Length: 95
Image (cartoon, rainbow, N blue to C red; front, side):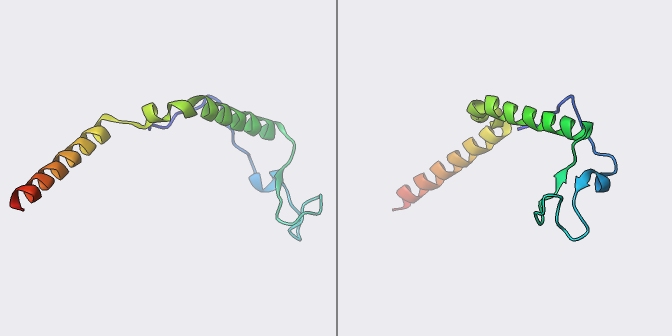
């Protein structure tokens, strides 16, 4: 399957200052190792993008077989089956 692109791309400038973590590894809520992106327009944009990914995944999931199947893959699979059938025929004839 080919990768799709989304219109909205987001980046977090100065990411080292955009997260909530303290010097001791605890965030403002006192939780260790739970770092959160601080409220900002960048966070809003990131959440919007993630929602779009989730919605896209839900909508496209029923069609994964059609989207992930390619001609070259089908051709290779068919050739392998033909080879396996010939090998099976040779085994039957030799027996």
